[in-house]
Length: 497
Image (cartoon, rainbow, N blue to C red; front, side, top):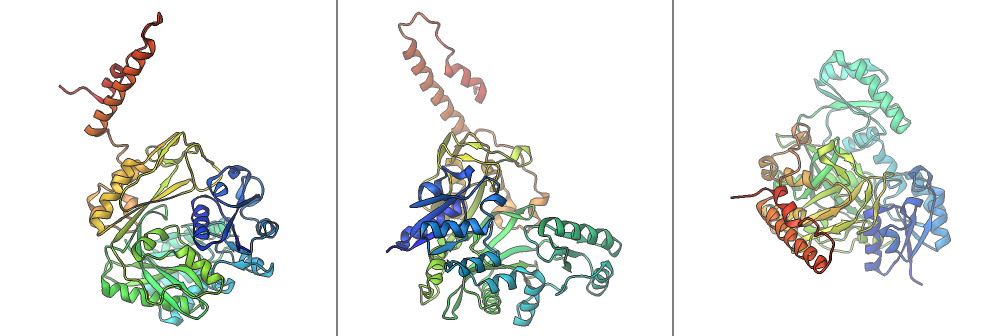
């Protein structure tokens, strides 16, 4: 009997997992909220079961509904994807307690790396470089101030149970500590129901570089290079690439060695990512470990030729990592996260129905998406439309192919972040790789680009064709001829003498 795997997620990652299942001869099972009843991940699965209303707290965030769906459909495996319950140790335990196979790391590993303070203590013991900081939550503002007096300012206050930039405050002087401590604790309670806050030395204008790791039940842990993830808006990554333009072979070896040590310190099994801050002087410091598959995993897959999602499933079934020797990297890959948002309006969400959709094709292009033409982007979830990935023999070729892919893509009915990326990929600092996690804080979106000469000429040709069709449709009719599309189009794109 064919194994079945329940995908405890939605959108593009659910589609990605379903495809990995097909490649392995496993039957994918989808779950869906009321808003996702007709979604692509549902259409691509062999079985699908509803789990409740659109709000995630009433559907995708309810372990009991997901486990019940697995049992009702005969699914033996459960893959959480990313987001939602992917790094929830209690859910992983509940899946195992129900007699099902959890596709991910052990709950104990999730717990160990889920606490910022415990993970820092473990990294220090394992010899992994960490930013000078506390290994236990601060009891009061004076403890924070004392740390600053010893190690210097600025400091970064962080929620111990946090992530995604929530519960974080930069403190540049001792007199700022009391107010910042109170605000960080308030945010920590609001977002994570835990007011524990700690601090660490704040590294100015660092890069965000992460290393992909895989571990299996034989005790083997391997690394698969690094990803550059420094281009971020509001602490959320927008563009990633592999390898990092700032990492030399010698630095890569040291970072990979540290990442493997980090994974071994928690007996890590499955795919995971060890994230580092890379300072301008070449020092790097442990930031956190994501105990799941990452949004940006495709760039590593393109460069190293490894299907990370399939590896997760094989390892969960008790198998070893599928390759004996670590694959050598080849070429360069870049990923842009395309969101349903309006960059001309402060990146406001742009939910709605996609009336027309054209994805790019051609050499080196990969599209991971959870939507097709006619689908709706709901307001209830993360507004990701797709991840565009471009691969080239080197970074320059990958970037050229990405610009081609962005220009070829057409999404009608909603606004997207494509114009933002087209502008970003014209910036000299971005093209040269001279960026940091703070780069976009001082970068202003210049607005939607004006039509190029080629675009204007194509529009005029299209208008001429439309005009001819209109002329044919009214020939022989007594009705007045409608205005020519050719005439109405010319002023729009300008008239060149």
